[in-house]
Image (cartoon, rainbow, N blue to C red; front, side, top):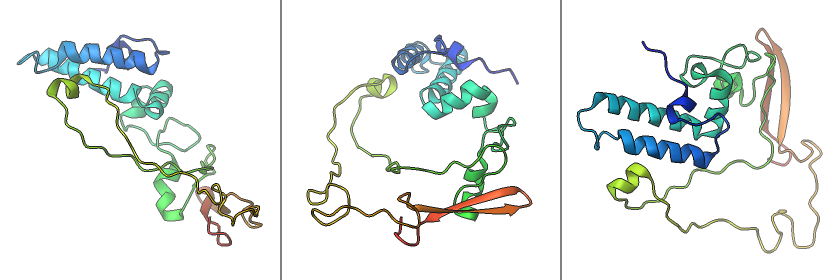
Length: 198
């Protein structure tokens, strides 16, 4: 199998390229090599797929970070990470999280406990697009509904005028952590605080 080209080279941008520069370079490649504009041209089709793959990785901040660190091996599913960065790209806490209810550390990389607010679910929005808009992109303004702070407590969760109390068990983190020594190393589990409920 032929060796893959560097994704930055595919799009013709530098490694320090900003998001808008990546998008502009990708659109140029997509317009040039789109299969509908080059019917039957296998080389154009291959270049179009290569540009799509490059843009899919470089436009995603996390995938780009992994690609910059490990190259194609980091984003092609050829690795397995968490052992202190020894050439692997899947964190053990992601793999074993469902078994232990939280982080899985102790292999040199430590555990990644989530702090602060949790990211919400992706928004879905249905709209009709023309073919060229779908193929080459378009910017449209949409209206979305969002939750706002409560007028009474301003997001503190307390009655009007009262100060919030910090939980004595988790000290306001909402999580309690427990470490156990196993044959794999130190296992850290994290669960919602039983006192305040997280």
